[in-house]
Image (tube, rainbow, N blue to C red; front, side):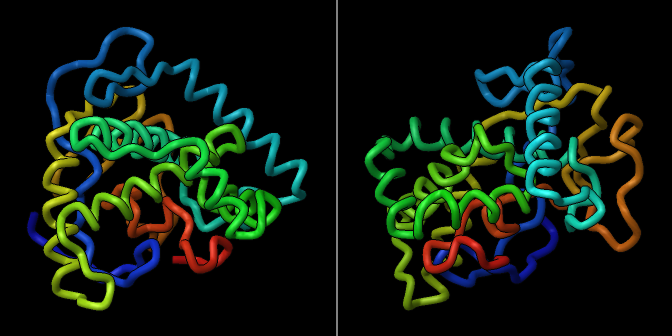
Length: 224
C-alpha cells in the first residue's frame, strides 16, 4: 500500500489506506457473476436488480443521477455490495456479532429511517441494502475497538485501522471482466460497461468506511 489519505470515518477522523477494501485476484469469476467476495457470489442479475431498485428510488425522491457525487451508479452499487460482504465475513472471522436489535437501536438513535435513508441513498446504497449499510458501520466500529482503538487517541485509531483493513484484505475479491478489472494501485479500471469516471473523480480508490459507506454515528445525514 503506497499511499495514505486523510478521510472522515464513522464516528472519528482517521487516516485511511487506499485500496484497502478490494483484494486483487487474477482468477476468473464464474459465468453470470459480477463478483465474488470470499465465499459469497454477487450475480450479475442481483447487481442489475439493485441498480434498477436504486434508480427507482432516486426517481421517487426526485433526485437525478447528475445530482449525485457518484461518477458511476452501477460501479458505486457494486462496490457497496462488495464492501458489505467483506465486512460480513470479517465479522464472522473475528466473532463480531451485530444483531438486528443493534441495527434497530442505531436507527432509533439516529432519528429513524427517514433520516438515515436519504443519507444512504446519496451514497449509492439501494433501499433494500440500507440495513446492511448500518450493519457494516457497526461492525467497523466494533472492529476498531477489537483492535484497541481509543477514539480520543488518533494514533491508536490509525493502528487499529491498519489491523482491521489488513484482515479485510484477506477476504479475496474477484471481479468479472465485464465490469472492469482490479488493480491494487489504481483500483477499478477499464470500465467498458460502466464508462469513464467523471473528470476529477477518483476511480482508483474503492469505497470503504472512510468514504462514507457507513453512516456517521453522530449524524447519519452528514457527508463523511
